[in-house]
Length: 454
Image (cartoon, rainbow, N blue to C red; front, side, top):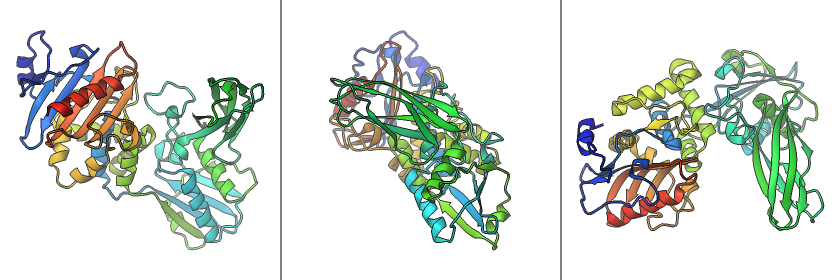
């Protein structure tokens, strides 16, 4: 981490950026120098040309997913798939299900599962037995760093997961004075709606949706108002309270079953799913490389922590060991163990602390790894074109692959940048200030300066 060099450079209270290009001194705008961390690495020259607060710990938010991406490609491999096993026993009309976890299962994929089961001869299901013990006795765990609310980013992590264990509620205004139209995007009996949202004049959108446990299913209680001028309506996501039952209810809906089936939990031996006296089917997700690309493109917390659990299960047969493996892996790459509590970066501003120098060392190690380098950087979204950086309008658009990280009072970005000169750089930049809750404009302001200067 070049601590000796850093202590020499920053031995005084003078905190201006230290650079191999003396003419370049970034303007941090409204931020104080101590609120910014920055390292810029010239790939062709093989040296860091700008360092500022290189060894200072900052909350790096979703840039933690860079560690997850690197470890996943190394330990699981780019072509790893998440598997879910199904076995149907005709004489008892029982459907057995087992998985180590598949965070990528969405409604469209579950429809494919139902269609495949029908095509193989499943006509009626009287009973569902599921092994969802991969994440422990309860079958699901709270996402670490959550605030305990019913919002989607606080959804439970579970082996049987659907739509990231959340549901989308669509609210469409009618005429002022009338109740708005409201419906849940996921079909089936799992979610019920109560309450109403009234339509008012204008563009108001003061809508509250409370998510409640309803005897193993999920109840959403609506209240508030929405303006009649909001023709496209409003969409909000909320967590579900019983992921296994949510999965089961939706699967039964796609199998055209009106019967209310409560999923039973049991530990199932893998040999059951190889039996010849029933109908067998194993569903596989898309390859891990594509999953990581989606995770980084949209900074999906649910996928990141599920991948961490999968690494723990595959390496040590214990989902809880995933976070330890990530830390040990990062230490093996950079020489320093990161101060992280999860794989996604979700938490308070005092959690998931990384130093810019650590992040840069990680990027340099990945860039030098001929085997994983193409996949690692290809998972990062292109500025101005994809995901969390799609709205970038600065001159470096289409010239950078950047992983973003955002929390209240925090904005981070790390990845590859092709500067105005055409030269290629690795970059990590983090802003952390208690004075301003949204720092993306300041982030882009500094990035644009770097792009122009180099």
